Length: 230
Length: 301
Image (cartoon, rainbow over all chains, first blue to last red; front, top):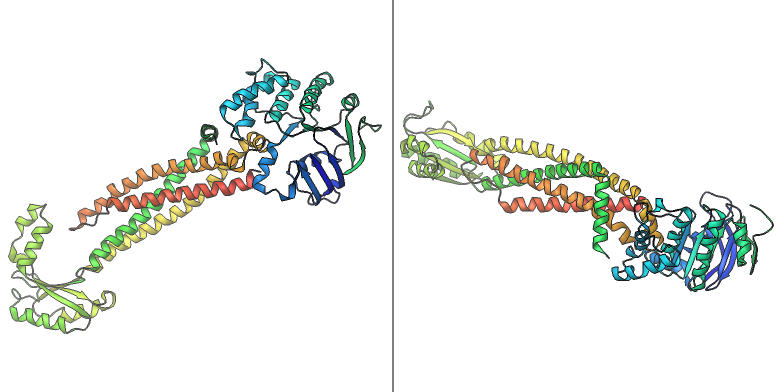
């Protein structure tokens, strides 16, 4: 599903590489934790998958396509197959729960009937049934993140990228979010989650990839967060 | 693409920075009407010029029975008329010299002032001078040669170059036209900057939305369209106001010129429509291109 072949990325005006000769392969339906200290290259990794950044070396394949060969105008189509969740939720404050989720479908031109059918399903899936009309400021952090997850998943992407989705949420609520991500993973969606949350990583027992200074230093099938505490 | 979604976005954008939008519309309106006025002036000058160029350039008026000129001793005699005709037609610079009798002059006079019977009633046929209407081969250079050849000849009352009268008018219009174009140019620069700023503000105001749109894979066109249309719609509103102003310029200012001319110098409605059409094109290109260029810089896609 995601293939990195000797990928390096150095940002302009910087000497140190953000990623250096990264080789890895993530299969369809996998759940992968990406751990490592801040600035280790986790976010760069996610941005490369979205083609928000271009690698300075190596090849990236996502869903069987070589990213370097995707024309700029086709990048939106790539992104439709990848859902994204962030630490800061990124909801639209002037739209309610339903509208926030529906927005993701409206802007890619889905018809209204489809939207009316699919959006409530996804809102139920993330556990926000009955809260369609709430505005983001009326929701707790955990609930806001659920909306964000619903929005990322509503178009049934093949891959869900989560960049520290529990970073702003207390541990008890985080478990709820992880359950939602796990549920999404069980539908066959590949989930890649960058995190600092040792407790979550340890409890989930999924594949763990540890990055440090732009290099993969550990890749464990049923891993834990690790000895280092960041 | 869902058009009501796009329309909603445009409306939100235009309303959100209302002051910028109003400023933009006003500047576009004024710059376009200035530009249009300049073009109307050019058309007006061309209209009157082409009328004159096909007509007489020098009129040689002959003495009448009661000419005030001391050179005249009574009306010009047939011998004098023949002499003048020979002088004129022997000159290589003259294309033709046409004699106009008092009777012909009077009937033309009646025709020109048909609307104003008080003129016609106070002038009799005997008071209308007969004349030679001289067409020059090269009006701009040969005037002095021909004029001095006949001035002071027996029977000649006065020699009038109609171009010198008109040139004053052309100079005035030309000056106005240049002034208007300079102001228009400055305002267009201001308009371009304003469009750029408005779109930039708009893009900044909606960076959350556009960020999410980009993330969920909305196409570039879909993301940019509301901004582009926002610029173009503001430009078109400005254009509508400019059109009203241009209609005013034509009907209030240029049509007033008519009263100083005894023949039709008025611009047709078609001329006005042409200018307004040109203004629309300028509005769309100006706002569209500026919005597009601004978006490329400030809206990451």
